[in-house]
Image (cartoon, rainbow, N blue to C red; front, side, top):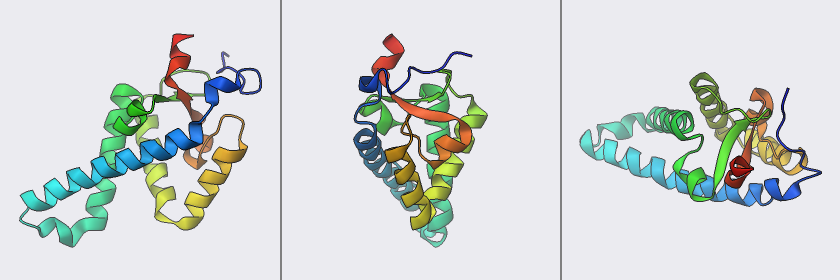
Length: 146
């Protein structure tokens, strides 16, 4: 089975992933907030009554669609990241859905966030909790060119 290049032998391919993931998260937060604000206005502010559910639905849908179609969300595209299986394959839509659901679930609690960031800092492929569970990771986009 083919694997992504070993981080020990090619550390540059995985450099700055933690910072890039954080920046991508900020951009995606702004994107999802903008979508939700639009929905709230279009529903004559009735959407505010369902804000937590609305936020989860929009976030999971946005991430699933973007990851399935582009291998990255808008934030990830801007910082040149792509989601891949550890063998280098692009994830299929079902894995993208699970990635989005597990990401949203880990963001709901402080413990989930801390565990995920801790894993990103300590695992060789800089995997978050959802990545570790699914066998995926983020890579720098230019890896695809090698």
